Length: 83
Image (cartoon, rainbow, N blue to C red):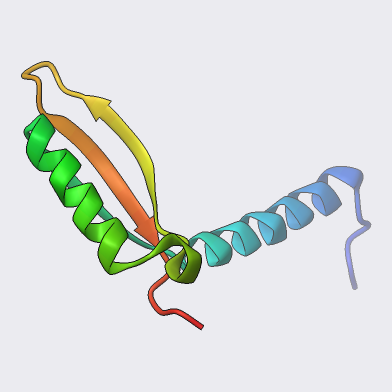
């Protein structure tokens, strides 16, 4: 015998499905995180953007921050293959 469905049960189930869909969509991207000196970070980002053009791979700097010691931590995101 099934238990009665409460709004909270339906909301929890729906939230789980939405979260699973978001994880699947996000997992399609390949991410690499680097911690480099400022100039080396710029050079590395340019190298990746040239190797994997945005038009084909949707390459971008997903996030970046300057660390206390002056180095830059950044994450590059791209699709693993072009169409």
